[in-house]
Image 1 (spheres, one colour):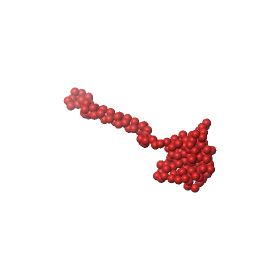
Image 2 (tube, rainbow, N blue to C red; image 1 turned 90 degrees about the horizontal axis):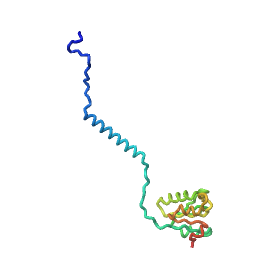
Image 3 (cartoon, one colour; image 1 turned 180 degrees about the vertical axis):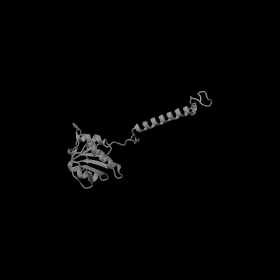
Image 4 (tube, helix red, strand yellow; image 1 turned 60 degrees about the horizontal axis):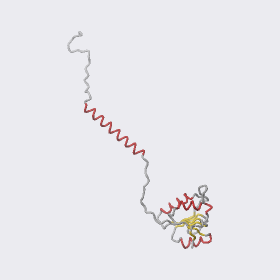
Length: 168
């Protein structure tokens, strides 16, 4: 067989089909679509959940009041008869006692708010032993508690500040 024999060639022919411009267009489209979907999923995953915001009209603020130690039984028995009374101090019948020896005002208010979320009568907070409150450094514990309550429920404090209205 000679080099010039018919039917034989030293150059191989490529018989695989080449990609047409239409196939390149579809490949680019799906690659772009994948990139957009991937970026959207990453954005959705990184976005933190937001707490629900409710448009609750503010009710009338309930001012904190002071009470004398000898008037506690009258306060709890008469004035707060229709309330679930949370008591920071010595246990009394008909009251929900706070078991902590020392409590932060914000933590006490959070516990009372959790109780208020449960169906039942309204709640009231009576502080018979203000010395058990652990306020932030440099603040009056009774004022820190009143700021944490912010008028959301009745607050009665034994020997509260003089400007607070007393039990009458």
